[in-house]
Image (cartoon, rainbow, N blue to C red; front, top):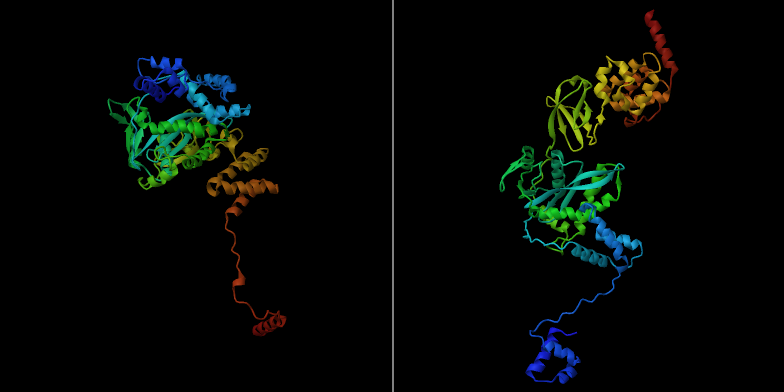
Length: 503
């Protein structure tokens, strides 16, 4: 193979030293025709040879990999298989090569399919504790046996690259506030700036240049944590490219693990995400200082963060009228309140996992929040006051279908007899006085004893609530040296004295 150096040597021997083609051929071991062809070149150019095509260990699976990659082009980016997933798939079919060969094949395939012009960006530099970046991503996971769409909040420190992710069922205000509260608690402090895109929960209106009409509740959260909010220009995601990259990395690194499992609830999924984030901090290297991990950089940046105040009470409040059945309608679901608030207007406070009803500044009810539609959440204690006037509602009342198991058994037995509904009402009305636990335990004891009369149950409740008699401990007193002896004669002497006194 002729190189530039060899070609320069040939030209010197021929043009400068005057050597013949035969002499040059003997010195270089090249044929005279080859030497003559290169000497006839009008300019000194670098010799180019066609690229040698060598057989790769991936070639037997090239057609299958090509089919998988073509199929993934029609899927959303979050659902496309990574090179690692493709490597594991062909390895199960007998592939013996390395993971790097599969990555090289995927890179060549993507370059051949979509040769696009690459854009250039300016690298960004942040001081410790200076800023964090926030973004949402749409992911999917199997929760309760159903594949659900989730909105995942990503919060990432711009200096140390420590990140925090948390999943929700929506991107509403209360979810946004809760994500900040949890992220600042995980970071151990609050940076001085937050960088966002123009999301609707933060920006009411986008004006020219950097003018923004910021949402009042969002500004209240920023004021609570004392950080400044900055918003990117339109279609300028690179301005918060650190968290944009985090969405891609976590989707390949963590969310594929989440999507491969089935979760009983969103709480279980998030309980897995929090420690998984910290574990990843110790595994990945900082992109600008590869000799250090993200966890090490976070420990240094933590000292530069502002102190974390008490959590922001990030609820969303809206008015609602209580129906005749003591139910409040909100977001296509219904929640019960005490019957004395029927036909009144109350405030509904929406939290990420709970719904609270407030009247005259006092909380009157709280329920676990439902994210499905047309669900009704009852608390049977809200309807106890109404039972005194309508005891027959016990038989088919929807709220009383969710009584504790001992109370349901007692109700089933009492309703077999005339007047049993009124006795059951008496038992239920003791709950506000004695508490649900004591009433349930008393009913369970009555059922175990086989006595289910109202008087017996009420007696057991009183005994459970009444204080136990104090038992005196005589062991702590002075010990007797001689045991007392019974002397009956002393009693007889006292009797004789009493008789003599009467006479």
